[in-house]
Length: 425
Image 1 (cartoon, rainbow, N blue to C red):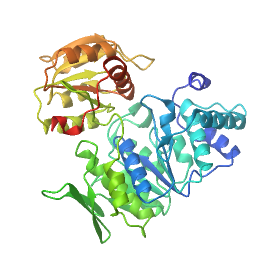
Image 2: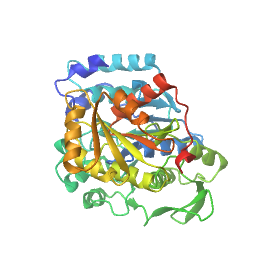
Image 3: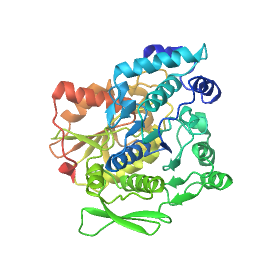
Image 4: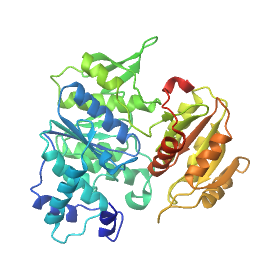
């Protein structure tokens, strides 16, 4: 992986020309008979997981491509729920290397081409592809989707996608294809998304208008409705009300491409109930609880704050580690509704920042809060846990890297057992 990171002079360089030329030399292999492409600012990974679970419930052969990973690179490409083998990855990388003929590819572009090759050789009914950054110029967009899913869009990656919501939405909408359905998680998606769909003759399906998912009083089930079809499904197993949106979009997208199949079978029920994804309001350990979330923007912070505000605990401490170009101030203001203390950790790398700098940014917007510069994340987490009471919560937030480090430390240093989400309800 280090070799791939060093191959291209830029970590991120959007555009399809270089990657597309190599994809063409590889034969432009379609990854599966059906392709779902998921773009947006938040909720992409969970939506991918739910679509994959529904594919499993239908008895299909499916695969997923997501990024980044939590612990192991192989997690990015799964076939039937299992990360691909290192041998398969090496073989695919070798094929990409041979085909590129000197064309310079970024780490993500190289990986995306390898993923498409592996999927094309796996006889798949369904491939669920998560866009890495934006949509229009992302390597995943080399593949024509059969159903585009657009999750909530907010301000993120402005250096690459534009400074305002309209510009970012324009980039996300680039995954839409002519005559292919578009499922929008938001009830009122940005105009750029609707305009793109209209221009291409792609029918847009909106949450609350064309499909919906609602709780049933006194029940552990929810009511899904779309196009005259209604049926019950289990409550989303992942925490937070935003997961209702992700599951609803997954159900709508699956039904659009599989209109003759039933989504209310026992197999479907079990697939939904057992759907999970690391780092999405994931609880580990106890006394105190440690809550891990890969969110790194204001939209994600709002969802986490809403989740914690709806549960009962004595106090919440936040172990925060964020890249320097992320909106730490706005994240802190959102989380300050529930967090009483802050342990700011280092984020290494060229885009990173020290815990000291992060702490100064948080103090600037929360001058009366308890804010500590805690150095490496493992030390910050250890201090936060030591300072917390039995019924308290320690939230680890800010990036995939932060969650990865916390997961490793909790597993290796403390052997903290998994905890059911009901622990803080």
